[in-house]
Length: 334
Image (cartoon, rainbow, N blue to C red; front, side, top):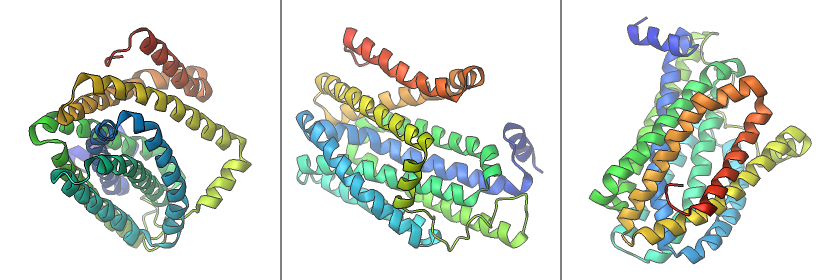
């Protein structure tokens, strides 16, 4: 075992046979979220470019598009082998990004492009992240997930820092449209990580290493599994899952109100699309940093002392404080 592998085993409870798959999973999530967080400030600026008064309608359109996309997504992932589906879906979105780059670069139907891009990002996020965690759930056994998913999620947190950093540094230098090229590149790198991860999983299957990533969880020529109807019925039958769904819905509603206020404040600060993109990227960077700090410093202590319920209630409490602060001081730093 190398010094790097020895260090990794001290950080996370990983077994020697799991190291390759763990690192590729980390890299996969890192580049995936880095791509998304490069696109996100562009999306937020597009919301202003498409007209702030249209934001409620854009959110409504997003809701109905997502409503239509979820069953389509469920049907596809349940039927198409994951070795084909995962690269295919990311290649598809990379091509979409390039199409938007052409439209923005040559200023084609800018207002309509901005509105479509705003809605499209939500669909991209749904598919990209859902595919990732479905893959992880199929690839790793439950016991492995308890040991390894925290480290894998840290890859996403790191990507959520890199993406805004790229946007902050380059939005005004190269323009918001060219950020899309960077996002497409990061997405393609994520596809390479998927392929390497599939290779690692195949090697585990051939070796039959029980301590490694489980090949029996789902063969690489199987679909990711699960349908939207099965998922819906599971939520309806479980008060626990229904409560979580309601909690997420209410938090999303509160977050939407905050988003409208943020958009109005940023729109008042500048008329330059590239500068507004950089401002939104700085906000994302600050939020990502604060999230990591809270996760490491506060959340764990609350869960250990009070349990998961009070920890979940902590976030709405923070939202309430944020609304109060924004009402008293309607400024960007709030």
